[in-house]
Length: 181
Ligand SMILES: [Fe+2]
Image 1 (cartoon, rainbow, N blue to C red):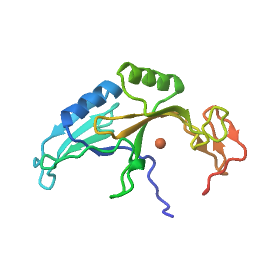
Image 2 (cartoon, rainbow, N blue to C red):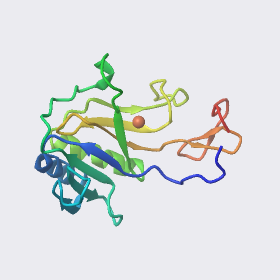
Image 3 (cartoon, helix red, strand yellow):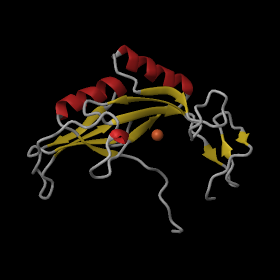
Image 4 (tube, helix red, strand yellow):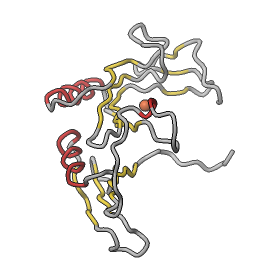
């Protein structure tokens, strides 16, 4: 194992069929702002349109990529249903600072008329509210205009030094154990 590790998984570059539609969706749903928008060919070796969007002060949290020479086909609503082809990405996630914020984003999604394709659900085999899945976080899922699956979540477990999970209330979940410590 490397002695030097990165600290954070950060931005994602998503390929979209229509840049304007996607920008408007991410503006309306998550309040993201466009930092920079560039056309294919502006920089040698980059034959795609790129739009950088941000949540806060960092230059980008999401990159929207569009290939003007590509004929796009619709993505399946759930890549789990697709049994042939190249490995797809399944979903990506935005973290809310607390449950109140999470419920606020959920309310906003409903106000926008977005289909909640899963949840809200507590991913836990330990919490009495849990559905038996993993992470201790509470989540809901929606689709963007190209059926990219977006998870909104709060309260993800931490892993203590001995591998025991710690929930959002700061309680160690005795009996839980990370496979690698
Ligand atoms: Fe997830």
